[in-house]
Amino acid sequence: MASRFFHVQHEFRAGKSQQWWDAAQKAMAPGGGWDDAVSRNLQAGFYNHSFNPIAPEGPAFCIWEVQEGITDEQFQDFIDGPHGPDFGLGAFMNICREINVELAGNTPYPRKFA
Image 1 (tube, rainbow, N blue to C red):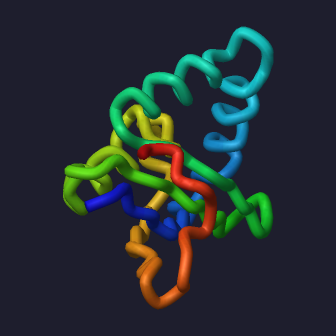
Image 2 (cartoon, rainbow, N blue to C red):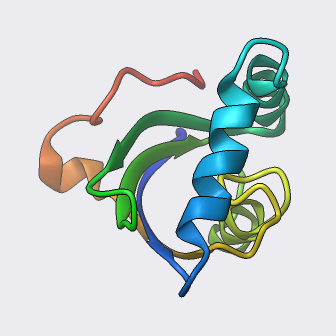
């Protein structure tokens, strides 16, 4: 078995988009902790390959990779939890779908987890 890839659709809950963007911009600013969060998530078996927002009020689409052995439930808990892209704000409803790489013919990105 190898790592798996997920397409995640992030839908903002009513009235939460600006709060989320403020938190995201603060986190990504110098000294905001973004690099530490990416490193921590990687060690936990989660890696975000791309973030694709459509508009400030959403939705946004991401491609995530999860390390071998992580269940669908564990991934959903991570995505919805305080260390996921929601920052623990409850701003997102996250819809996670595994990408069928056999149908696609290859992975959407080179694997981060061997």
